[in-house]
Every structure is written in C-alpha cells, then in structure tokens.
Length: 227
Ligand code: URA
Image (cartoon, rainbow, N blue to C red; front, side, top):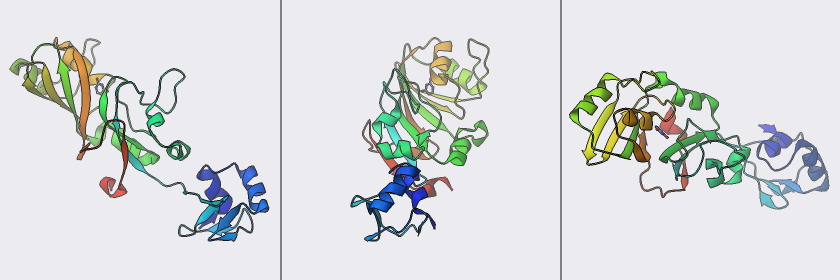
C-alpha cells in the first residue's frame, strides 16, 4: 500500500500540491469512486483515474533500445537529441536513464533502467558482462591484430585495455568482444592498429541481443533477465 498522492506524483500525473486540489475537486477516482483524501492508501490492484483516464503507476523497468546514430546516450542535452527522445515521456518521469553509453554515432543495443542497483551492477567492470560489436573499418584485420587484441591493446594515450576478442569477418569488417567499456573503446582499439572505424553497432550485451527489434524502437524486458 502507498499514499494516493505519492502514487500520483511518482507517476508524474501532477505535483503534490495540485493533487490536493484535484482530489478535492473530485477529479481523482479509485476503483470508480471519488478519492476521499490525498493520504488515502491505495494498492497495486486499485484502478486510479484522473479526469476519467487511468494513471499508470511508476514501475521499476529495464528497456532495450535499438539506438540509431545521431542520438546521445544521456537524459538531456542542450544541442543534440538524446535516446530519451525515442521513448514515451512516462519513462523520463519514472527516472529511466541509459546504462552506460554508446557514442552518438554508434548504433545498436542500449539498456536503460530506473533501477540504480541494477545499472551499477551492469556497468561495473567487475561484472565482466560481454559486449559484442560489429565494426566496419579501413583495411583488413590480420592474425597479428587478433593476437594484439588477445594480449590487451595499449591505446595511444597509454591506457591499457583488458584482453579482448577480435574476429575478422572479411575485408574491412570485424566483430569485437569486450568485457569493459572505456570511452570510444572499440574505435580507439581498432584505430591504434591502423583500422579507423566508419560504422559501429553493438549487437549483444551478456545474453541479450536485439532480435528483430527495428532501429529506433524499444521494448520492456522482463526483470527475470537480471536476477
Ligand atoms: N566503443 C566505441 O568506440 N563506441 C561505442 O559506442 C561503444 C564502444
């Protein structure tokens, strides 16, 4: 059980102050009857309406987004569109934010959640979650490049990357598997071997793949995927 005013404000229906007025005016109903007071306890099974429209309560959610190029992995930005612009407004109100980042120009699988503990667990390098990327790049990767990835690449600024997997797929394309997420990591690793990247897509994170999710669209994942 929780208070009606808390339910409505967390759902983003109105501010606490407005809610008082709305309840007094009879605009809020609980299971079809006018709400009695803002402090009234409500449960998950109660149907709460505002001006006759059902209000969806805030839930803990995990979303998988097929991120297109051109969007920042952020909740807001003064200049560029963010991945939040691709989602219904309710998720912003519920406090959903990207888990880690894909670069503005990178496409593919991006998780978002309003579960802070889960976000922390997924981002932590200690989690060892595999992230798999498809890259198109200049030149073709060689067996020497594969060995360099396996040994752990030293980036131009001296940053040492953990051992990673490089699979050359053909001229100018490769698949890369990482267990960490440094800034521009795939682009910088391939560039350090003379293969600047022209296109990058994250295909997999742990056991999660995009499946047939179209670019620019999202779906809610079951929390069971993360227990
Ligand atoms: N590595 C990159 O270079 N960019 C990304 O967006 C993700 C991994």
